[in-house]
Structures are given as C-alpha cells and as structure tokens.
Image (cartoon, rainbow, N blue to C red; front, side, top):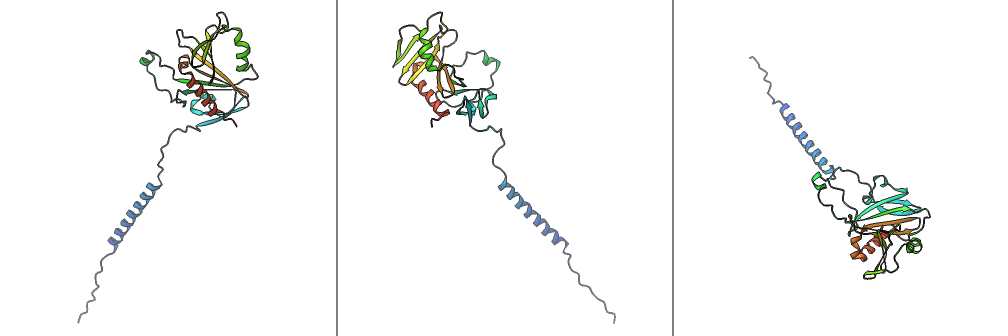
Length: 232
C-alpha cells in the first residue's frame, strides 16, 4: 500500500505583517503631527523694536525717554549723550506713529497743522540759566507795560531793533509758564519754553495758537518733565 505524506498548507503571514507595519507608521505619524502642532510657536516673526524707554545721561542728569519719541536715529541709544530731540503727539503726549508714505500729489496740498510738542534736552555746560535770562537779559529789550491776555496770562512785546524784535514774551504764575513766541507771519508763530534740571536744559516748542489754552500746555510740559525725569 502506497503511503502518501500530505503536508498541510499554511497561509502565509507576510500580508498580515505588512498591515501591522502600515498601521504602526500611521499611528507614529499622527503622534508626531500632534506633538508638532502643540509645540509650534504661536508668535509671528517681526522686527525687534527694542525697549520702549531708554535711560540716557545728559549733562550728568538721568532721563528715561520713550524710544519711539526720539526724532534723530543716532540718538536712539542708552548711556551718556550731549543732546536728545523728541516729539510727542498733543494732547495725548504719546510718541507719534511712524510717518506714512507721502505721494507727490499730497505734497502740493496745504500743510497739515502742527499737532506735536517738541522737546530738546541738552547739557547746558554752565551757560546762563533760563531763570537768569528772564530776570537780567529780557528786561533790557521788552516794552515797558505787559498786556493781559487771558486768565492770568500776560504778554510783553520785544522792542523793534532788538535781538528778539519779532517775538513776544508770555508769562503766567499759576500754573507757571514762561514762553518766548514768534509772531504769526507767512508761517504760524512758534513758542519756546525752557527749564533747567540739574545739568541739562529742556526746551519745549509748540505753536503759538495753543496759548488760547495755555493752562493745558503748561500742564503738558509738567507732565512730560515728570515722565522723563522722576524727582527722587
């Protein structure tokens, strides 16, 4: 009797292994995607603007000035400086926005009214103080009688032929204000008000027309001074 050995056929496991590998890869990819989403930074790249305020030393006096208010680029750094020029929107007293592009057509239009107050801080090097000029220099060139303007503000014109003959001197006691202003002509008049803090002089410049609300202007100069130089 012929005996036949029959080998039982077993199904191949190759297809099953491939399926498992594919599932494993898919799970791994999904896990990597989740981790990448969770760790992906939410901030957007942008230009580094630096600190909002810069400590500077002018005439040995420390001021803390807003970086965005500095008008001259090379002055935008910390440490000792001879002078810093700043500009602030009025009446908010915030640093102005970056200038917008102006087309040729816009240049020909009427100039935009000045809505900024400008401040220059410089070392005085023992020059005559603003208070001393008010008491000893200006009286030599002023007209004799002051004129009352409004609410305690007075005006005295400088005599013709003097170094200040196109200017008027405005003064008030409460709140304190002293300003030398050019008269309106082909260009609007501008005012200059000075004060000394230790080794530095502060010079504020603003339109003469603002003197119709001179108390607000005086308060604005006091506020800016206090923000940039805190009295200890």
